[in-house]
Each structure stands twice: as C-alpha cells, then as structure tokens.
Length: 130
Image (cartoon, rainbow, N blue to C red; front, side, top):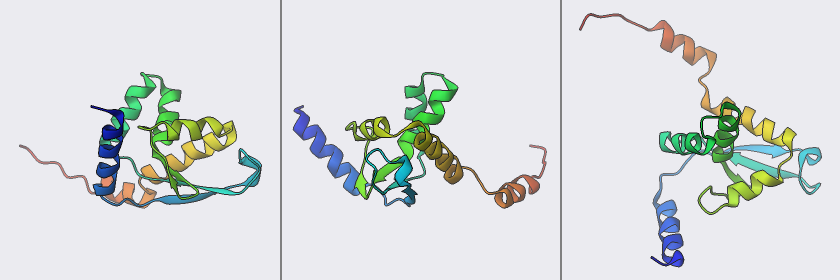
C-alpha cells in the first residue's frame, strides 16, 4: 500500500478516535528550546499506548519512564504530535533534560490516582470465598 494511503488512513482513524482530555502545561522560557514561551499538552494513555511504550523501552526502567512520558505528549502549542509520524520523537529530541524530567513528572501526575481515591479504593476491599 502506498505511503500516502497509509498516512491518509491514519489521519482518518485519528479523526474518528474518541476525544481526549488534554492536560496543558506552560513551558517556561528558561526550559524552552528556542527562548520563547510554549505550552505542552499531555493525555492519559490507553492500555495499548502503554504497551507500545513498554515495547520501545526494551525492559529498561529509566527508558520506560521516558517512553511513557513521550507517548503522553499530545501537542505542542496546540499542534498535534504523534509517535507514528515521528513528530513526537522530533519534539522530544528538542527538549532539554530539565523539561524532559518535568514531563515525566507530569505524566505521573495525571496517571496516578489521588491519595483520596487510593484510600477509598484500598479501604473498600472485601473478602469473599468463591
């Protein structure tokens, strides 16, 4: 299948995908790659996206944290990024270490349950015999 058809199919699939919440964070000028203010939007990953990131990490824990955060980066200044077309890798390559580490923290922040939700969930445990 020609590459143009594959790209078109990916665009159509993306257009039909369910809408997602985008968590937008400001990028401070001092962490910017070009000395200008920018914003970065992250999304909660699906289980399939998490598995793809884990495969890319090749069983390396430090690499896994970075791959999960990179997969979660959805947009820069409102412009959509994708692991599929390489735009996410390109953007990630421009980010300095401090910004990449903040993105790992942001990933964790939106993917981990609050203390209240965790306490409710774990505190509600019941035991039954089946």
